[in-house]
Length: 253
Image (cartoon, rainbow, N blue to C red; front, side, top):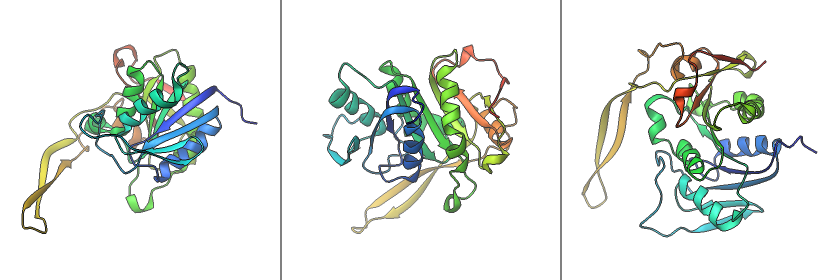
């Protein structure tokens, strides 16, 4: 039997119900809670932020016991789960992720992974977003979050701070990680927007929206970018950053 930290955890993400990071987080959650629910978007909803579906109905598909896919956004998933299954007994903790790729700097405001956490926080529920950085999307290693995720969540749950966090794991070997640090969300990684034009089958124009990014100039030691460069786990508070001291290190090992 696991050493349960809480009774009930709700998990969601923005990469979709079939994402490998969701399975990683589900395994972690089973070491933390007696009861684990998974309610995730039916498809990839990266970039959804904290948006909710006001103009389209939600459809829900059961995949297994306490495991559901929702046709909407990550925020929709949290709100739907609270209304449909939890009623007067909300989950003790909401976990979002594990996102494929870091959610740092200017990406945070667009992140559906983070949006789900902020939605839970609005509803008075502690929540943590988890993301795994990578150097090559085709060869992403989930080892850092698999090895350290449970310990990090336990530490944040027990910390004397509001439990609403954005956590990023570095792109390195799990054994190369020795600490996690408080990190300030940096800015300036988005240099400019990009539009990639095309034509559909009826010769009508469309555009893919994207960004030109660079974080080489972000060097402040307490910034989220710099912390990941140091192969440390970057922990950033959401909503109430003013109360945290910059540069404080929390030793994991």
